[in-house]
Length: 228
Length: 113
Image (tube, rainbow over all chains, first blue to last red; front, side, top):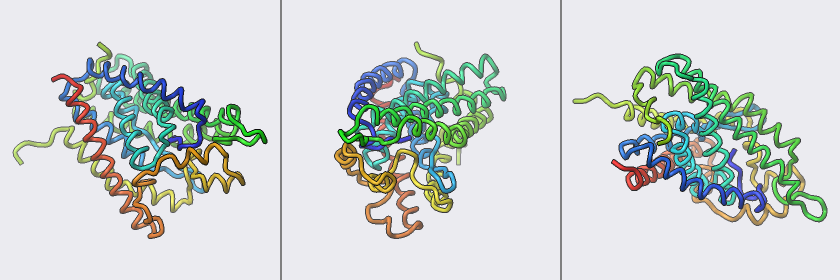
């Protein structure tokens, strides 16, 4: 889901940059109100976890690869705003140091993976967990559903961003200037592989961490209590 | 050991274990003949798929030369999967260190006690 440089037209990547910079400033303000400096190590852990889980490329035999993002579990533990910052830092380091995801596409990649995944994930978790006990099985099940929905929402968006490029920018001879595949190709390609496989990985990762913390340290599941 | 590890410390150890296992992320796709992620083809790969390279992509694709492209040391791609795994593992450790340091710094500067 890391869109490389060259796949998005300036008409696409510039608006995402224009959104993500003030968004991250707002996120920092929100995080200052909901977390304290003693939570900094946990934010570092969350960002590093997201980074390393993205290195586990899951193959579709003879086809493509994909991976979990870990953004939903970070959002459940520390809140969606903190998850936005943590995943954005991971994405920025991936782009600059490892060339994974483009520099021009950073705004769009942060939007897909560091805004959409945490928010869809966090609010799905709240919805499905309801007022159940912190140790209830319903909690890790809600986490699994949240993980699945969060990453699929992002994959759908990335599919749209790829798929609208031929409509936005073509050469006079009709050849696409950037990502070449139409919505009819890009959208099902991105959506299906996440619906069938990579979404299940995000669901598994989210549920496993919740189950572990339910047994090991339930306090860590109650850090984020909404915005103040 | 005087005091048992805290949950957060245990999770750091778990993260370390994940980092050590990270080469699975290139070995498994290689064994199952899975290629790039959808939409993440290099310009060369895309040119092969399409028969041409989109004009706008040419300029943008070379904008940034990452020091460890695709989680590998430059030139190690010809050395085979074992050496690539080593580069991948080193990249995981470098990435974790840089990201954790950045986040701790941001937390120290930005968050109140």
